Amino acid sequence: MPETKGSVGSQGEGELPPIPGKRYFTIGEVSELCGVKPHVLRYWEQEFPQLKPVKRRGNRRYYQRHDVLMVRQIRNLLYDQGFTIGGARQQLSGEGARNDLNQTHQLLRQMRLELEEILQVLRR
Figure 1 (tube, rainbow, N blue to C red):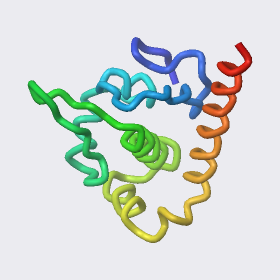
Figure 2 (figure 1 turned 180 degrees about the vertical axis):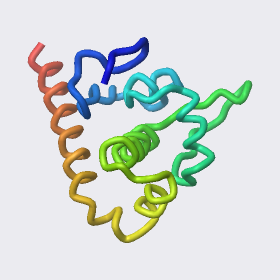
Figure 3 (figure 1 turned 60 degrees about the vertical axis):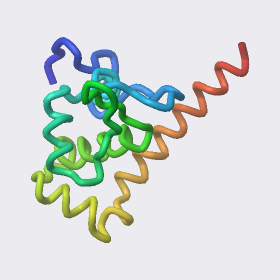
Figure 4 (figure 1 turned 90 degrees about the horizontal axis):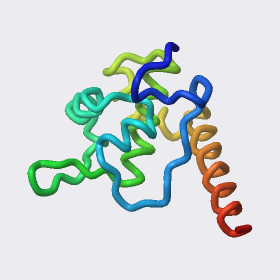
């Protein structure tokens, strides 16, 4: 994948940066954390009922941690596993989502990275 402005550069394909321990994230931050452009995130909000960021003054979006994880799941289904929007929507809402091994591996990988980050902070 060619590197473009705003893309995740130093991480390899499918490797995304750890999610910081914040409560809310702007659309720009989620874009960086998930390797997806903001206009794509806005489109996915219309297509996936599971993705509902909080909207505050001026209609600004604020994503929570579970929204960021959902964006990563959607990205994985569409970009890595090759699902269509409809297929990804069905996968997320159906029984298959609970049994998806790739989803579980992705969440475990993310948790490990976050725990390693916490360990580094504690060692300082």
